[in-house]
Length: 114
Ligand code: AMP
Image (cartoon, rainbow, N blue to C red):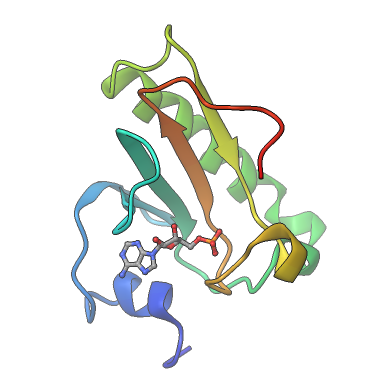
């Protein structure tokens, strides 16, 4: 989708600090980090919200979690702890409408989230 920021990152039309890329997924640092480690893991294919997931996407979503786990180890936050978040729609705080998994860590995260 031409007007989607994350599709433009996938197409290399918008630069990013890329950490991992494979055939179906890219992981890159969030431009406005909310923690010392704040990485976004996104599918290359455009999926607008979690509400739009289909049964066929289950492998893709599983791969996103495994990449987050791998990155948590690389960032050395696997033992201290981290959080993984999908925001969905307005009340969930979603601002970019191409699904993305946030990986946050490197500081004590409060609960419940605001
Ligand atoms: P959300 O509010 O869950 O939709 O999260 C969107 C995230 O995308 C925010 O944390 C933004 O800081 C991040 N973001 C937006 N544009 C970019 C960009 N060009 N590169 C990296 N991160 C971005």
